[in-house]
Length: 67
Image (cartoon, rainbow, N blue to C red; front, side, top):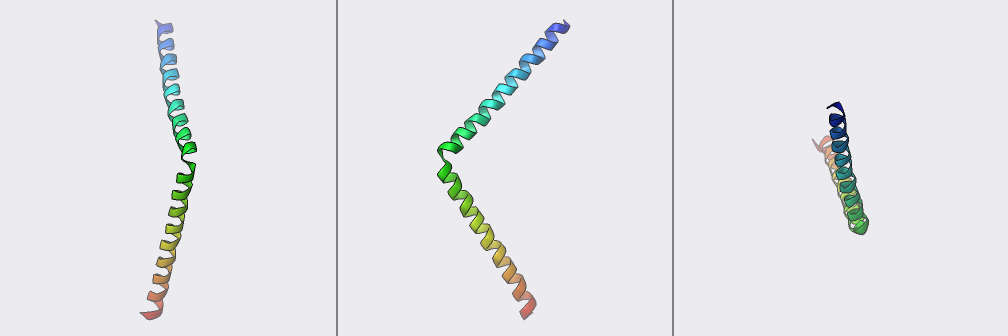
C-alpha cells in the first residue's frame, strides 16, 4: 500500500513536470520564431513609456512654475 502511494506521487510529479516542460518549450519556440515582432513591440513600449514619463515630468515642472 505504501509503495503504491509513493509510486502514484512519483507518476503525478513526472506528469506535472513534463506538462510544465513542454509548455515552457512551446513558449520559447514561439518567441524564437517571432523574435523580430517581440523586439519591435518591446522597443515600442520602451519608447512610449519614456515619452509618458517625460510628459509627466514636464507637466509637473510647469505646474510649479506657472501656478
